[in-house]
Image (cartoon, rainbow, N blue to C red; front, side, top):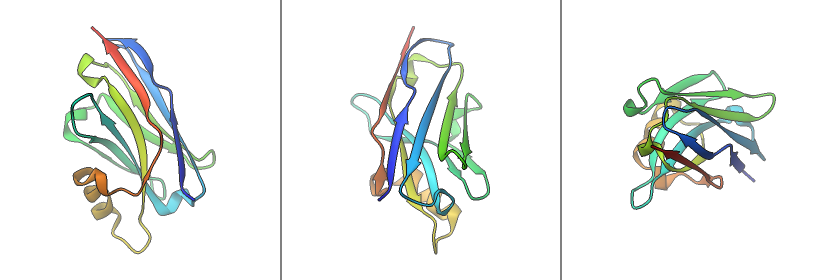
Length: 133
């Protein structure tokens, strides 16, 4: 059973940094794409970044603009989202999610995750990030 546990959220002032962590269990990490998503109050869930732990390929939504970076530690089964220069509009609940890439084109999998996040089958509990101005 795919299990994901996100942590690391909190309250930070604008311009500050946070590192979110996603602990993955119950599946072979290298056979999945792991994505970070967020949902602000009253808004739809949106993609932030995605990583393919098998080869380290990374994908970001355009608006990230170098402020965030995603990484994985496969041995520890962890995926991280480093967030720098945070802005009040980054306030949201952040989630990690997983989609298998077995028998699938990984890039198409990532594109689908970003475009149709509600189609993703495995989600962790979110972690709240609040950025004060």
